[in-house]
Image 1 (tube, one colour):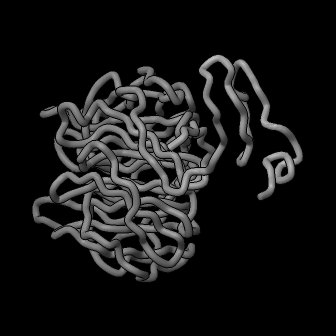
Image 2 (cartoon, rainbow, N blue to C red):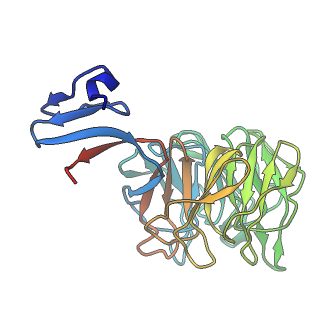
Image 3 (cartoon, rainbow, N blue to C red):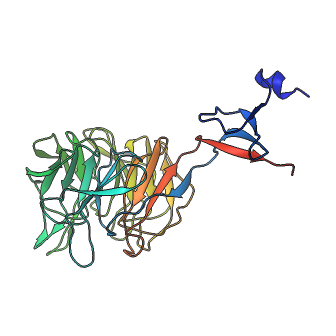
Length: 329
């Protein structure tokens, strides 16, 4: 049998503290804890608890192009009123920053922590076309959507090139197949979804987007956008509405949570198929998210509002490094 030195070209180190940046396959003996340790890669993604929002709520907008360590949450529902609150996440804790100009919930959000867009949703006295732009410090009202609606897709793209689709307008009850593109100044209606729906999850950009799930009733539908048209592709494994999405492309995305009964599910999209993966700890719908499967995602807020509207969960994708402790069993 080959020895560790023959395989790795070095002896097992004896160290008082664990290495700060070990590589996969590295093994060492910790003389402080008197244990043998090694660096491995995770075989499946996992969820962990992050810092709580300062104010629990559901139907929150998020900067979808944000990251696990630089996220933005805005608006939402604090039953019964709408909220204008904005909070910024640094990977550990949420900090309240300047409010939206208009309190609203069930809107779409996209962009980053320092340059985001909030569009549509419910705002007194009803459904709104309101659009606001975040510059890292303040929100400014800019040009409205062409069609006011609520529960439109969770949005995709940066703040200068975004996309929203679907949605709902009450009185009379109307589900939409509409798609609108944002160029940083104006909204333009483009080709519709293949089916009308609302409560849609979204991921990607305005030239490579993914829309999945929706209502009513809850759907397994998945559609991919190539910058011009929507194409129906393989369905979610579980019918879902009011989920959130993560992923900055339409070939690698996540569907997180959703309803109609709040769930703990996570599904991963590889450009062709959805695969069910590790569940979260907290069942909720009308939640928000950001990040990617590979680099790390984040999910926060949602219903039931207490306590789930406070909580944050952080995703580490498969292949991430993890330190293992060896025993003699």
